Length: 93
Image (cartoon, rainbow, N blue to C red; front, side, top):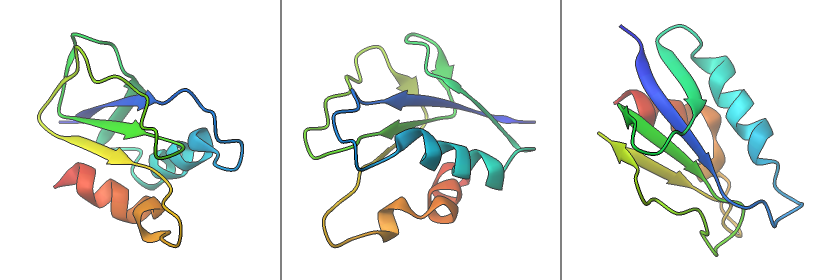
């Protein structure tokens, strides 16, 4: 049975961080046991991946229903939180 993963993006104000490319990398790592889709508010997901581009964290979680919410954003001096394999592991836990 596939896990349903909703993807929610922030507003995209940071031109130095390609949010979509990171999600595509994550999707390429686990194409069989996970079903990714753009988040539909009110729909229940096994997990939701919220991708922020900066520390403003502007994406609203109103109406988000999920067993798990994983929030990721680039942090100065830290790149391990953007590691695609680490993120997919968190989603599959």
